[in-house]
Image: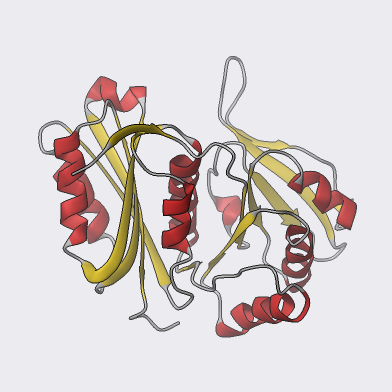
Length: 277
């Protein structure tokens, strides 16, 4: 049922931009940028979350001094690497300038927001449709909590950028995230260890949200060496919640620490049109 292929999305160029004023309360995503806007001066500071290595310490490290939000400042950040994740303060100016810069690059772009209002969504749509018709924007990447957005981004990054023994590639991930511009997204995670860990982990994750029938699901499984029995249990459990014409994509991301203690951690992103903002 599942093909074992050493798979990763080499060459995929992607920009993930998350708009929220709440990211400062969380431990963030390794090597992502956390861009803070000073509402008074209009300047930005680029911080980066770095995991401890050697003598280093985990935490926020200042990557730049306070600078004006200029085309050059944003361009310098966008030019580095195939994958760029930005966690941005949510202001009209910041949204507009970020979108303007993104449109200059040949890359897929995912704009992720936390509990946006209809006015905020329409604000982004107006900027794009009026000035940048070539940029594809899905209004579906809306989460009810900043924790949900971070779970989703971590899972998306892992599936796209890390080799997986279960075949999944960038096109699969993109297809789920850009399936329908009317989707409200949910995100949750669960972790367990020992015998029956797979079923317990996915049950924990599913219990965190009230899920209607789903149209699109993206599952990231963190574990030791791939176990197809556990992989099947997770996928079949979630598949029961997906409508017949829906789409489910799942990937296994090996982690030595999970293999050492027999643990599995699951994060999923699920979308449904049966939700009103």
